[in-house]
Image (cartoon, rainbow, N blue to C red; front, side):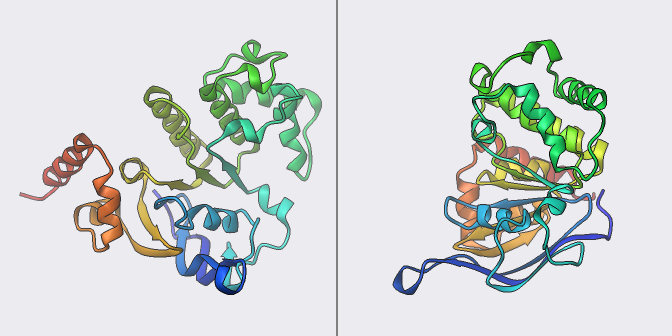
Length: 269
């Protein structure tokens, strides 16, 4: 359960690209706050601005207008920020160098830390992280990223999170490249991470069904704006935006029936 400590706060922030007639408002006058240990999903179609907003949270992009704060302060030092805020992206292969072994790159994760552990401690923590995502250390010994499957590589990204133990995780479509079975496993690992590390998690996804299952709150985005936000039951059962309705139309009927059934079962007699 989340507490009252504010992790992220956005006050009328905007991010624009291009100029003149070709200007694009990727994030358009957005305001919100996210509490410590909360799970929030930014949900929307391609080009809605959710991934740009994720980059703002990571300190990779500064909004041109408005104020964005992490724990009440502006993000001024990226390396320091990344000690506490980390990410998992949808394409794990793009996050690893194909010319270096998996293990060496997991050890390189310690470079972001202010004080690196001893070599033995690093080796031990890499082993523990691999075991935490159900990979036996010998299975990846001497192996390169191209020798692993997409599902295994997603688990390498999660192992990196176990190593770094951040306070906040930005998960950008972390299950989009894997099948349903692996997707369920990855979500289980993320929930395990959240409980063990007391993390705040921000999911970036187009899948409102997935967001419903894992989130404390949903932010629905369209054309750079948050057009609706609230508890999953409120947003999915009583949508106020046509864009929310469009997202709901895209999920399988079995999920819709499950959501309706869950809502009915929780109504007091």
